[in-house]
Image 1 (tube, rainbow, N blue to C red):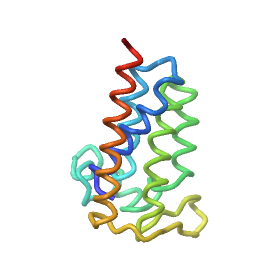
Image 2 (cartoon, rainbow, N blue to C red):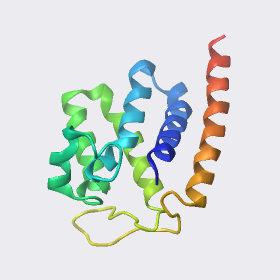
Image 3 (cartoon, helix red, strand yellow):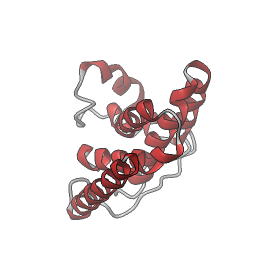
Image 4 (tube, helix red, strand yellow):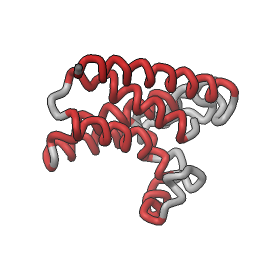
Length: 152
């Protein structure tokens, strides 16, 4: 999926879970960042083109370790010990990225080092990807309106 689709999904997920968390100000940006992070391992993604992520590409490859629940759970557990308030939003954002990518033709290897692949029919940048992006933008707008309505 394209970065914009993952961004729209990340915003929607963050806004959906927002009423259930106590640390709203850190929750949303961490969910959004984590929903984009798995693509840092790909040299073709916007995040992967940044110099800071070049080492991740050497270690993991395009759809390598960063596109697994093994990494998601491990990183979330590490964050739970180092910076506990960030563990849940990191897990939420990262896991929804992986869930979305599991429906793409490229798929993901959910539980590395096990070789099984979870894949679907969504082509990156294709019609379904565009439809998902538009759908999530509409959902994001609705969630933004309801979130702000709750404040007043």
